[in-house]
Length: 412
Image 1 (cartoon, rainbow, N blue to C red):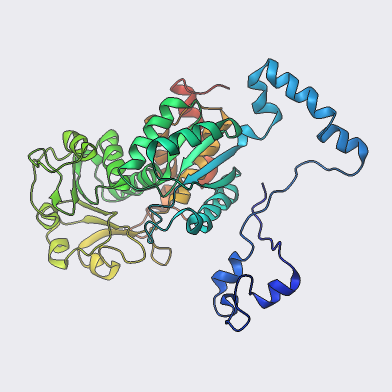
Image 2 (spheres, rainbow, N blue to C red; image 1 turned 45 degrees about the horizontal axis):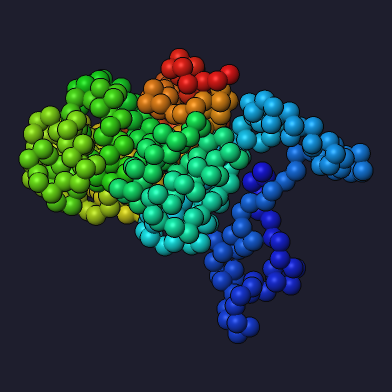
């Protein structure tokens, strides 16, 4: 799979920029470079072997291919050695929760899925195929992915709305013997934990010394809370639109009821703003705006990770008045919490050892490795490396592969 920009249309169509448009319409390409970049899609399939003559053709296809097929039929594990399976991921969505856009459907989500696929290739050397499904029923999605799975070494679930995403991931993990990873949950959690580890190190504190408040009880919020607990944070409370998720609430979904069972040891209740009083960490994955007085009420030396895009829950100018470390989800501010720091290396490591799944230990190892890349350069505006730091993917890949072997899920 080549991550390259191609234009399969004719030269005249490309110049006019008008495929599917009326002749009198202003071509979108002419005034917006984003449309120009996306014309024809962002990916192409590229052969890895030459077909120059009849001998090449007879080896790549018939009759030579029959020998390989027969060998795999007799020894199924050979599929990893003699096809692309062991190095390719399916990027699967139903288009119901596209970042910043919401439920826009499968076809409208394709540019995002193509983008995800080329990030896999660019940053992790992993081939990926976008698959946008025209169904939203949990059973249908699970069954469809199970039937597609023989072609792939892993499945990256993307932009599937909560709470369906939790059940889909769980059921696929139970049904398949290849890594299944919902990046909106776990990629976000890995990078957040890495940044928080470094912020704590910068301030001379341990994770166990910190109390965090998460705004948003969707896919990312639940996964971050779970990972912070696994990593040993002192306490974490999660707030949804109705306030802090707590055991005494009677309106909780099953997912939020489970969340309440392992978070909020302090027994907080009420609105997000009240939970922030004296808190050491704010993590925003919900959108909306946190009032400045609530930010001001946080503990001295607090950390504010306002990760909503394009508008952070707390603008960095406000956050810097009260916080020692500020991170966002945007690339135009320091400390960008960007999933591309995690998912390419996580899958590269899992595929390298033919892991049967991605464990909590593998995710924690990825966060540790990512945090370690910063090293002695640690500063308030540098608690997480750049996606373009060439050390990132190799470090995460090696850590994930080692963790997979240590946890007994590696098969090579």
